[in-house]
Length: 367
Image (cartoon, rainbow, N blue to C red; front, side):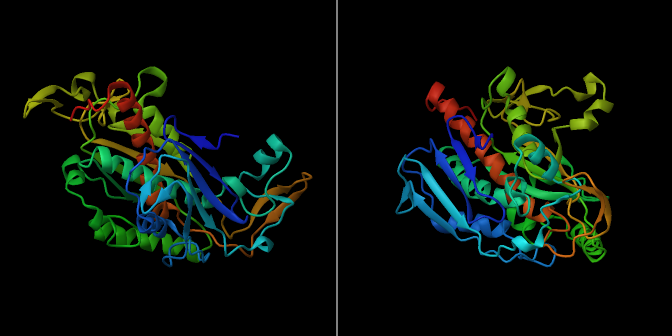
């Protein structure tokens, strides 16, 4: 199984949704990076369930235990082990003999002949606790070597309620604006409408999906490798590895297909002695390498698979059955809690590429 992510900054996650614990082992983190435990905890608090009426009522404190690799808030250069114990486990909420619609029950059984008996196991969003903890460390690596770089991530659409910010509006957003409401949408009016849609779906036993936008400000030139390890390809792989993620687009994305090449091309200009582009349809990446412009991309998340309405499915012995879960704790919409997860994966991709670039060229990073 592919449980390890990254090349120089390598992260291996472990644990199942209703097992004893989940966690991550980070190898390749440079020494003397400042990683205060409270910073890691703050990131986990943004992701944890039960933080509002819009999220799963599962009550997990998600307290991180740093087992190795960090002393006195400084990395040692040795493997970093981060552990989060599962404390609110309810294995009895699940039936082992039902293939739940759109879940990984069938595919795990077909591939391995066995699966975790309770919940989604490794396919559950519970696994992303480890990614967020590791992402907090990666963010500190970025802070050490590129302190001007900033990652902003927010909900821009829930079902058919869309923000559709312009690039100029996106560049003016702040992290504080994003955190002003439980939706994590920086448009208060749209956030209120999104919340109403999520609440209606929750009350009807249903779920909704939507999109998350990420903006990377002040990314240096040169991150990413040509051909098979393009920066945009790595970001796409990172985002599409997330539970419920179904689509990814960078820069103009699908909208760019409606333009002529003469309209879509980003002309080069000189700004303050630096080569820049007059527009940014490329989303900050050209030829798979960052060009110094802001990187921006969207990740689409499907509606949560667990709903409390009757659905037709099969048992593990292929008998038809009407399935309607009576128990279980699930988000009616993953988007608010997916924001810190997307930010974490972005940090992991960028930090890995930054360290790889430095291994090639030392500190020669252009702004």
